Image (tube, rainbow, N blue to C red; front, side):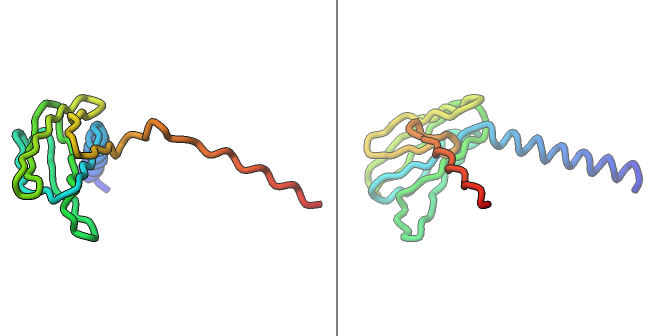
Amino acid sequence: MTNEKMKKILISLILILVINLQAKAFEDYIITTKGKLTDISIEDNTIVDVYPFITVMNDKNTLFVSPLKIGKTRFCVLKNGKEKIMFNVEVQENNTIIDKVTGFDILALDTPEENSFELDEPPLLKEVQ
């Protein structure tokens, strides 16, 4: 293998690692509600990407929010074809903050719940003689 090929392979591996680390720097969110969500409009789509999460039942009541870079923006959705709902989003270095909106559940995918628990270790089996 030539030095040129080795350099290309090494650069490719480094780029993959850097991109992967950067992608995990922010928290992804799922937003759900009762009713259909349509017509997503993002103020600055270089900061977050918002798209519908299609379920088996095709309820159209779930959004997936994926931060792209640090900054502040907001996005708007149409609920049940008539009510405009606005979400303020701030993407920071280590987390993402989405303002609470009445009637919507906002769930961070990358952080454990506050009430998480650990299972006890199972008892050791007695040795069979």
